[in-house]
Length: 498
Image (tube, rainbow, N blue to C red; front, side, top):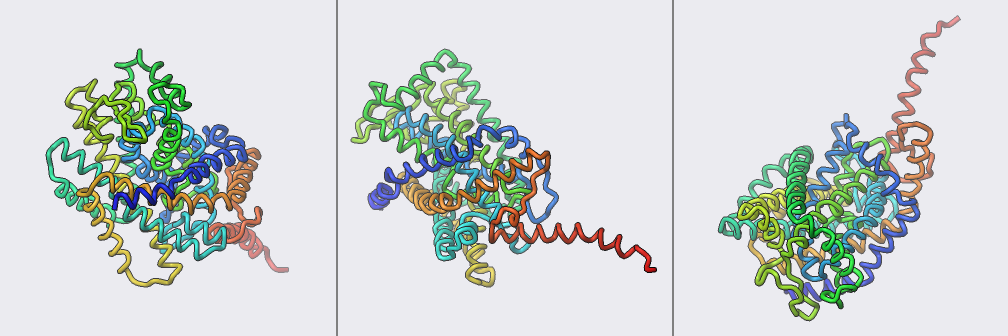
């Protein structure tokens, strides 16, 4: 089965998809005049806008949920895997992917907000919604929802659970099956509590775990401060095939850097659109900017921290395309242990306990947000296909928990292969959709910037921009119009008749 999955991945993750991610991100960046640089001040300020609507969540909660999803095993094991297959140069291409991906993320999140809906008292939005409403392609929206449900609810949870189980087994010698069952029970408590509970848990855990991880990285860099220039030189020279040791890995460095970068920050995959659809904001571009910033936090901060710890301590292996060992600093050690060994060079045996705790928190928050994404796709399918009852909801919940246990006890190679397949399929569907809809998102950005220039707090009025099928915003605009007319009506009624 592993050979079959790898063969399919070779097609799905061919040069065409990598070219699509990089080229689209570059074009978006140019068309929006480097919005990911120009609007950094807005990105930070918008994080702290309050939410007074019980139907939605705040921008910060949406960011925390999104980071909880992004900051997972991809930031630790994924980075190590990229280095092991593409050499240190893969880190540079991860940076490129993150920078360009920030613009891509703005496009897809803005579209999510434009075409979101209010269903059963909650805001819902994401890939199927903007394909359906923006492109008027119901059949493709349904296909996208099915692909996303399978990828996020069946394939992706296995990587997070597998990483937790293997790490706990290595540190405490606990059976992966036991870990998987306990993990599933803990997740069940949260996912049966709904989106508000998921958002609350993410809002608390994500800042805490990110701060602790970055603190350890700073300590390790401080202990190896004299090696920092050499580390940067190694990354840059390897990225452009200028390093003799890693010559011949340029193609792999680009491919693995982009692939792992996309898996980590998810920009362009559409998987991070669902949390943002639940956010309550006055203008779609606001949430687009917040999530563009989250790509920086994920790739340029957390992933970079992992890469720096591994490279500056030399705790990694690199294998060539033909299986020949190019670097073998850790014989018989897999990528999931590189960061642990790196941390142990400074804080000793405590390193493995810290990494176990970090990976648990990172992967746990990722798992609970994966469920929310899957649930939003199911809500779309149920409403679009007029499926009644709660049977599908319970099936999804118990199926998700089963996949957590399944991932805990199965081969890591197969698990990662399946996850990459899910990522690739999602990437093709979503990237094509947002390229076709990019014009709408750019129009929304211009509207936001014009209102800011006029000294206003931007409010989205789709009618003024000639944007169709933005149902939620159209209803909101009608409601505002009625509320504005109401005082005029009251004043008119007060005028005495002569």
